[in-house]
Length: 386
Ligand SMILES: *Cc1c(COP(=O)(O)O)cnc(C)c1O
Image 1 (cartoon, protein in one colour):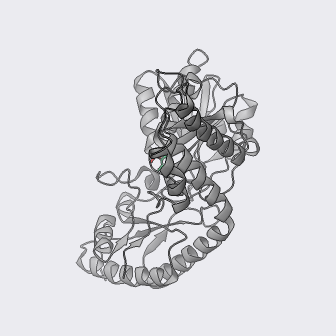
Image 2: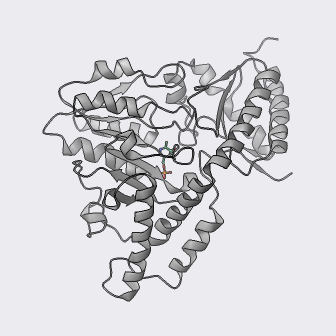
Image 3: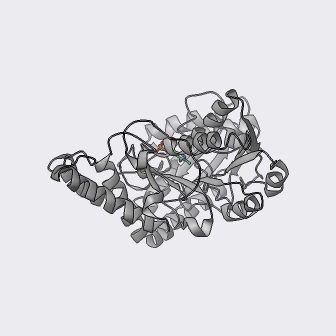
């Protein structure tokens, strides 16, 4: 059997339509998009077209779209840029305790500069505690950041409600929508956010390119000082191929969304039902209801996630323990601790993230392999007495 990819939350395969759109911009249309000649104009026309499409796809204006090198840069820029731009008003900001490391580490960097961060607790299903949010808002709070969908447990946050709370205090809300874009249609006006980040490679576009949506009039410090690109906010020669590929991937994603979501959710639900029924002592993490269709996150008690991952890898199955960004470190995932898992249980956790190309046969093979290996590892585990 071919290798089975169940790690779509880490990255996805480039869509063939995106690749064909990109190819001419590597070869024939290689101009610098900011050059004042035909080569440049042709490249800029493609970037403008991509910007217009992306803006309309999320209910924004083209002038509110800023291209970045991906989700990490967009998160860094939004948090640091908006917090620093508001330093005169106050030095306190709020993010959820389960944000991506791009947010958590940026918050820690700001704390070292003298800013103060409240890490909002979440309920056991990963939903932000709205009462805690209300309680943590202060007169000097200048920024609230809560992700739209979590990358480890898939929980979808009530961002529109958070915006409603923040509105009373005129605090801008930023949302990291990297995991949400492949899963749902997003309208920034309906959501009401001041800023939003997403990343091309999580929905079938090329790696190394993403978007920061920034509502007109939202104060932000520049990301990169340099040339006049991105209305002088983010200097650097425009990534024409990446931007063109990202826009095409988004177009296909939206076109296929309903059919793909239905398929992915039914595979995921079948997987979850089989695991719950056939493997004892598991915990299904995250929300049953408010969850992206691709995500299943299980704790297999008494054993190490890394050992499961390793054995699945040997069997040709690609999954992730916690999140790729924190694996390699011995620290348990901050997301799993925040939803109340004990440290030992957090270590025994695996994320399975499904895509439209997965099949029921693959899922059956994965569950069978998982069952055998979990049993074998438990028999070797000193923590498991059966
Ligand atoms: C992947 C991811 C990022 C980082 O995006 P990159 O483009 O890989 O830098 C940020 N936030 C979330 C929720 C993610 O899943």
